Image (cartoon, rainbow, N blue to C red):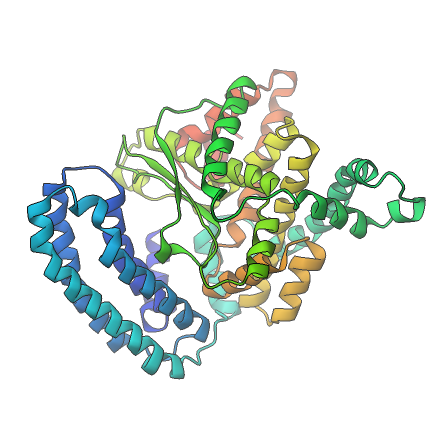
Length: 474
């Protein structure tokens, strides 16, 4: 982890070309004081004041450092700056309204901060955007190094691509075999020729399943219901121990929208009793009706169930709650977490839940589709940043090969350019988790117990999977 931070400082140098570094830092520093009820308002508001007072200095540093960012980074920073303005203007109310006297004292500083952020937004639009001609591709050498540090895996860049391409074909076959009985159910008059067209059969079933979907008004409440359903399933099937840590399903804050559909925000590794937030994103207000429809067809009722498995139960929420209960031998061991272990566990959970019958073949269709997406993520990540993959090639992979809706594919193309190495964590982590379970099953044979295994895997915190393998004596 220390070597990774040195690499980021010495070679990546993101503060020179990535405006999102500044905006995420600013907005998150405020948001977490409001979102987490860890101390009284009288204790938190002075910290809020200090952070608001520091914002103009950070903005000045951003203006001094940023030279020629990639255009997509600046465009996204402009969107998120407006979200930060809204946060300062309106989003602090849940905290400051609880201390009226301090609220009145803070109001002038809020207005001053809004003015500073508004000026920064104009600078991004009028000064930085016209010169945002940087290359969003990291380049093969830097990507290889970043991948090595970010994944902490024994798999090389070449091995990851080889396994991803092989798994792509295998998973395409598996999703067709799952789709075929459903296709016969939905289209009983289909002839033999139609039944042998693997792509059309799979696409038709996914299209049929997409008809049942939430909208901006219902997506958060639906996700809440699904969390309850998934929790009951995990308990009744004895898959893994369910923690008592509180979980809140919320609408994603505006300043965080525009990259991912959902995320899990868990307490810090040293916070033993905090709440976890499962944030779900309604669509941006400026999207057309057609784009919204495409988006929610992608995130239909069955997909939301699979997504909830990944983000909450028994995925991120459950695993990170267990990690926070782990008594680490050192502070360093507690603080540093492996994204590959965390994301890999969540993807592994999707497959495990589907294997156990959660949601029936309809949810298994979505799980396999998400498996295809994880595979595509790894291919996109490497092909974009260490290669020359075009937008058309990326869209073809997502829409034609992995059955994604256009709205989701457009968002993923954006995310793949904004980030690097992170998109590979899903596939690599899941591959390592599945390899680990296979090794334990081979070792124990008929004595293998799934709940005991899962509890043991997540009992060590969140280290790289290869170290969990060592700790388990495999």
